[in-house]
Image (cartoon, rainbow, N blue to C red; front, side, top):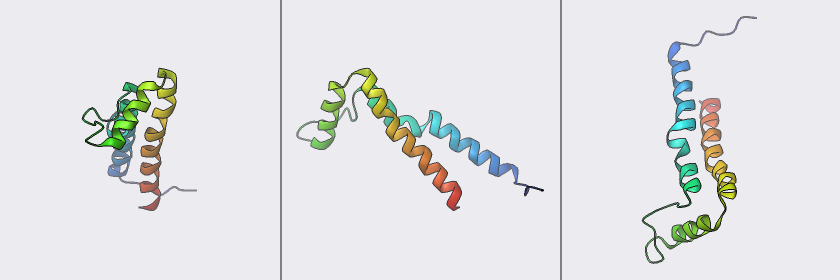
Length: 87
């Protein structure tokens, strides 16, 4: 069975999405969690919810931070997949 030919731009877009998920914006939330601080500008007075997340992350062990860090990274991958399948 012949597969439909996809133009080179299609492959380029997918490669860029994979790169962004693995190295770029897709890792921003995961990096913050692994570093133990979600928003360095948050305080109890300014952005109190994000400050609470900072306090929580600081209490976690590096192993637990790594587990939590997978959540935002996985969501970026899922969003990329959903974009491709609905386009």
